[in-house]
Structures are given as structure tokens and as C-alpha cells.
Length: 125
Image (cartoon, rainbow, N blue to C red; front, side, top):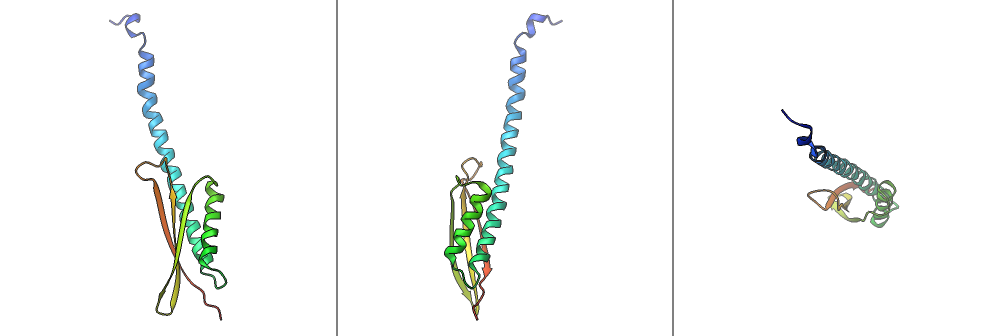
């Protein structure tokens, strides 16, 4: 039979053994959720920037700037996003490709999140 004095201090041990896994699950879930959200925002911003750069009266620099503004508006101005772009031509079709890279310091496994988008360039007539 257990006496009252033999279980003294077990509440602290129980708290640590329960709180640490719950905290780890919470941090992992939060990181995965924000990483997924950041990827979706980055992809959508890159698609919109490529579409904008593919307009007849725009260039790649304006598409890059549009992408950076959209990412800053959605994720905050503190995150660093690198956007690069280029033109390519296959036959008579000209396209614009933008590649966006976002540095995520808290996301486990990788510090970079990279997406790309291609849009067909409009011609001026």
C-alpha cells in the first residue's frame, strides 16, 4: 500500500512528462500550418506576378515588384523574398517565368521555400 509521502513530488514529474510532448506537438503543428500557408501565398503571388509581367505593356521588373508587394501584404514586410524572372520563346509563343524563394528560419528541415510560375506573354498589335 502506498503512503501519502511516497507520492510527494510526482505532480512535477507528471507535468513535465505531459507538457513537453503537448508543447512539441503544438509547435510542430503551428510550424507546418504556417509553412503551408506561406507556400500557398508565395505560389499565388508568383502566379499573379507572372500574369502581370506577361501583359503587353509590362515587363519582368514590374512582375517581380508586384510579387514582392503581394507577399509583403500577406505575410508581413519582415520576411525576405527573392524573386527572379526570365523570358523564353518556343516557336511563336513567348512566356514569362518567375521563381520566388522565401527564407523560413523556423520551418524544420529546410530554410528555403521555392515556387515558380509561367505565363504566356501577350503581344501588342
